[in-house]
Structure formats: structure tokens, C-alpha cells
Image 1 (tube, one colour):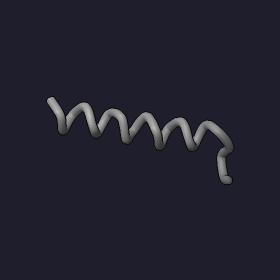
Image 2 (cartoon, one colour):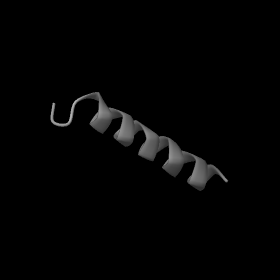
Image 3 (tube, helix red, strand yellow):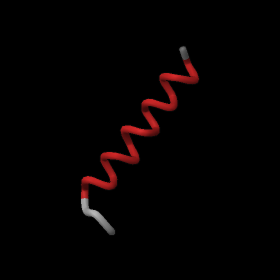
Image 4 (cartoon, one colour):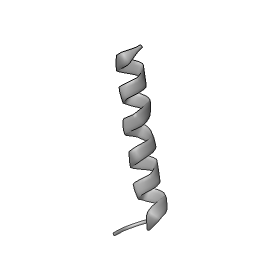
Length: 24
């Protein structure tokens, strides 16, 4: 994994943000 857990967190956060944006 490149970037470590930070990369995973960023990806997860981006997905959540996208989901919220699409839901709203």
C-alpha cells in the first residue's frame, strides 16, 4: 500500500463525501 493508512482514509473520505453529495 502506498501512502499507508492516510491514502486509505482519504479514499474512504472521498467516497463518503461523494455519497453525501449524491444523496443530498
